Length: 532
Ligand code: CA
Image (cartoon, rainbow, N blue to C red; front, side, top):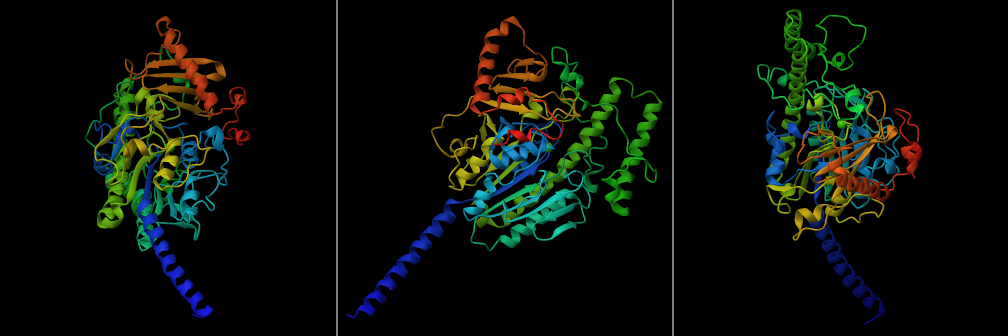
């Protein structure tokens, strides 16, 4: 045998085994790495998802994820506003670590972000819809198309987008529909890819100014939507912040009739086409005429005004959610039609935070009370998560990143502050899990919500408005509506001591810098100096 032949034989064998190896690796990679579709709405209250509640509306498509997968009953955010929640989801860290303490805080996209880690691990990644962080994405996704305008909140009609490849463009239609169209387009284009994918679909709705799709404008017109028990909360027993906030269900403010010129421009309505605007006013104007008549006849005095405002508010809110639910249905239908992909695709539905839909007479978020602290979380993973699973463990948005990384078998960085909750969904017996969560709100600005942090356990909640050292303590078992502040109550001394110790422990555990509690806060600028 001459030497050339030996080498030839060697290369032949090495290549054949090499390709087997490659094939095996590919097969294993495909098998072990699920696709993920992360769907997020903006300000969608748990109460307005029928899998959680069902007393005010029905969301059959979103509910499918709970029926066919798992529903988390105690999922919470770390800081209840848009940009901070989004930053926490992407980084797996509390606001003081990722730098986004408030909506105006700068965004450092160069820090470790889980979608970039997916991309580097061979995933095809994309984000479509509301982004809202203060600088555009860079290389953290393979492609992105984000809503622009209205302070990066986006428009409801004929939305403006900016994308990594096309720059700015206006896409005609209704925001929730258009975001889904674009997501389906991406999914169809990506269908032949060998790579697993991670797709973020992020809706603007039902965020203020809550303009529904034309087809939902007249829905619920003659209905009376149930009021929450605390619509007429008197805020007694609580700190002055509960009363001071500027997002109470106040007097209804009607949109001027069609053709009436006003000093202040309505940037959302002026984007509509003539046809859209006519259809909108055809529904709205008669309702407002009725409002002026009721007011003239003294039918909207005192409590009646609040009741009226609530009905107008909640109807637009759930009409916007009808649009979201319908579009979640379109995404799920796509997976139904692409069965091979469906079985290996995780679908998540969440919102950047829940929302006060009249509870305590509010329509906003920010405060650490339950309706703003919560976050809906529904997840489906065929054959991995048992259909109809209900979880009561305390999870938070710091846990999303490590959970997704865990699903994709990507190593979780040590400095991520959350934990993967995948084992509690797929493994028996259940792993140990945290017994308390930490919350911190910084954005002390025009909404008049004082800066506060706090701890919530399964049963209790302690809130500290540290700027003027005010405290609130709630027993959520006996007082689920949080109207009876037990702070200073002699019978609650033991609980207070335990909770205070736990709060101090969590501040240390999550490394909240002590200067936070003393530093003067610049509204809408945040505390950028806190970034490592
Ligand atoms: Ca939000």
